Image 1 (cartoon, helix red, strand yellow):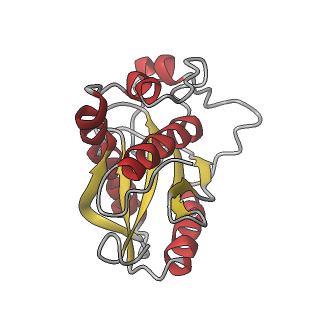
Image 2 (cartoon, one colour):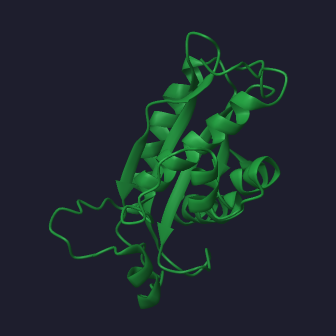
Length: 200
């Protein structure tokens, strides 16, 4: 893996938030899913991690965003962590995968990836976290990849165009969206580029 992306490990990230402004709105959920290789050198989703977050002090929540995501901040089984603890939880999984593949750093994969990266970077800065494993500005965006491969840019339509299952009732969960984005990335990446291999 380290030879494929100049020492970077692709890691799919999805965040659910309290709005669209990463400097103002709260980070509420985060999921990460490193990309792995199977025995034939094909890309497959690896072992991920996720966390619910307590809204950081000073951040805001637009009630309309909770209607979209369905997040209940007061749910008794939400088990939300403070922002810095939640970041460390998911970053530990990323650093383990980076080390496993002999990579130098992770590179964020996302659907509209800079949205996720901006919220991640804002949370890192706000919490004072010192060990962010991700490249600070480079990403792989599955919007672009799916647009080129299938002519689709909406995640649900791109996933279906790739021949994968999509359940709209589970959408807007960080874990579900991360899993589907990872499958989308792997499907496209396995079909193109110098490491492309035929499906088995």
